[in-house]
Image 1 (cartoon, rainbow, N blue to C red):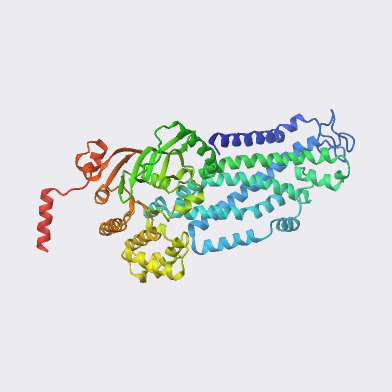
Image 2: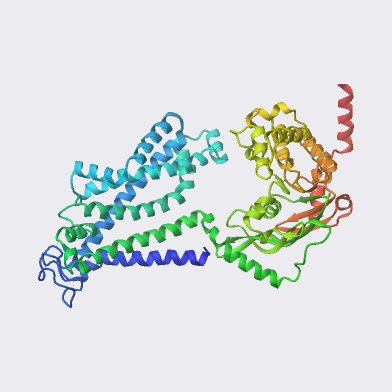
Length: 572
C-alpha cells in the first residue's frame, strides 16, 4: 500500500477511536438519563425522548451504551496492558537467557497456546466468579503467551548482534543490556502488539459478558447484549434498538484499533507495503514509455541493462539506490563492478536476479537477458532462469548453505529444480562439478560446519555451476576469506570462466581483485556509474577523481620496505 493510503488508514482508525472516546467520556454529560434507573416505558422504541429506545426495565439504551463504553474500554485496555507487559518480560528474559529458563518459559507458553481458547475462558471465569477483575484476569491469562513468543523471537535475533556483544565485552550487566540495547530495539514491535491486544481484549470482554461472566453491577456492551438475549429481545422488534447499537459500537471500536494497529505495524515492518507492486509496475511502464533511451537489447549482448533505477520509499519521497545505470555484457566477458559499500553494486545484482526485497522497487529501465526483459517476465518465467541460465554466487558462503543438509543434498536440490535426471545422473554431475571447483568426491557427504571457509565458498560456486549457466553474478565472493584463500578463489573463477566460456559480473569493493579478473570495469558511486572502460586502461589512464582515489588507495610497498622485505626473506 502507498504511504498516503497507509496514512489514510491510520487517520480513519484514529477518527473512529475518537468517536468511541467521546462517547465514553463526554457522553455521560450529554445524556440526561441515568443508565441504572427507569426513565420510560419498557420496550419503548426510539423517539425524541429516548433516541435509542428503552430496554425491558424502561432504562435508556443510549445511556447504557455511554456507560458501557467506559467499562469495555477500561477492561480491554487494562487486560491488554497486562498481557503485553507479561508477554514482553517473559519474552525478553527467555530469549536473552536461553538454556533452562528459555526451555521452562517456552513449555509454559506452548501449554497456554495449546489449550482451547473459549473453554479456557469459561472454566477460569466460572472458577473465579463473575466480575470485572475476572474478565481482566481471564483475558490476560489467555493472551500473554502469544505476545511472549513473538517478543522472544525478536530478542533471539538481537542478543547476538554486534552492539550487544560489544556491551558484554565491556562488562555491561544483563539488566543494563536488556534495558539499553535490546528493549529499545523491540519497542517498535511491542507498541503494535499492545494496540492489537486492546482490539482482541474488547472482543473477549464482550464475549465473556455475553456469557454472563461480567460484573452484574457494571454495564458494558457485552452485558447489554447478554440482557437483550436473556429478555427475549430477538422475539420482538426490540432487537433493532437493543442489539444493533452495542453491536455496532463493538464493531467500530475493533475496527478502529485494527486500523491503527495495522498502520503501526506497517511503520515497523515496511515489507507489508509489498502489495503496492502492481501500481509501481504500472508507473514504471509509464516511465519507460517516456524514456526514449530505453532501446531493444543489443544483438551481441547476453545481458543488457538500460537506465536501471531502483528506489526505496523514505519520508513521503523516494531514495534512489541505483540511478539510471546502463551497461552491457557480451558472451564470454567478465565485467567488474567496483565501488564502496552502499554504492548500489549488490542492489544491481538483486535487480538482475529479480530478488529485490520490498520496499525496493525497479521504478524505470529494462534488464535484457538473451533478448528478454526480465522486469516484464512472470515469476514462474524468472524462476526457470534463476539457478539455471543465470546463477548467483552470494556473499558469506556459510549463510548461503543449509546447515542441516550435506553438500550432495544441496547440489542435488539445485539440479532437481531445473533438470529431469536419474539418481545416477545426478550423482555423476555432482562428482563432476565438485572436481571442477577442486573438491574431492568424499566432501559431498560433509555438512557446511565441517568445511573450511574456502571449501564452503567452493561449494557455493559448485551450486552456481551445477546447471551449466550462461551468466554468473559473483557478489563479493571473497568476502570474509583470508588473503591466501582469496587468491585461490580468484584463480578458480578465472580458470572456470576461461574453460567454460562463462559470462560473469564480478562485484567487489576490492579494486585489485577486480583488476586481476575483469575485462571491463564499471566504477560506481552513490548509485551511479561514474567511470568505465577497459580494466587495464582504466587503471593506467583514468582521470576521473573518484577512480583515481580508488587506485591511489591501493596499498603499495615503498622501495625501502621492498628492500627490507627482500633482505628478511634472504635471512630465512
